[in-house]
Image (cartoon, rainbow, N blue to C red; front, side, top):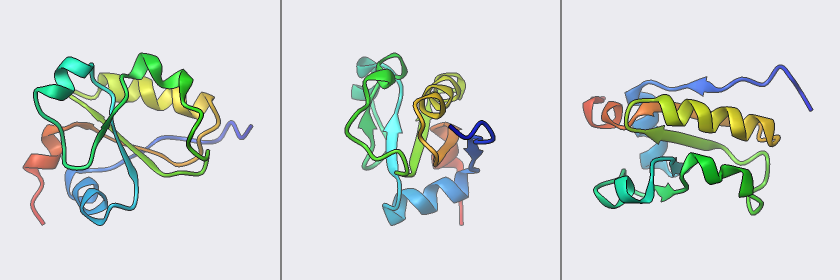
Length: 102
């Protein structure tokens, strides 16, 4: 495993562009209850404690993580890197998506 892998942080504008392009898997790592209260367009919900069970995605799949304030997405990114995922991105708080303007 490459120990030099790092999470790439995207600002709101960059994240919004990738979400609109649909070129990354968008994972909301909040609880199911939080997800049901509102989520970003096209997001799938996978609470960060359950990430260790991810077996269906290729390890090279680009994944964009978000949560409410950045803490859960940071933990989720660490888990995915430990599982061997090589293209892990985070925008942290989902508010950055709504604050972004092109």
